[in-house]
Image (cartoon, rainbow, N blue to C red):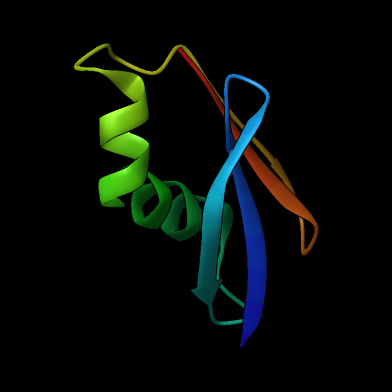
Length: 61
């Protein structure tokens, strides 16, 4: 397992613990399902999800 910091619009909102070998699609689904990400998006659809493998995830709304 690996802990990835999650940013929404450039601000760190929390962390995601996921399997080290998870593919980018699985990471994106897991991030968008997190409560703090949904709260930070304020109902907006994410424009882009940037994933740096085994480093960080950034959601841009």
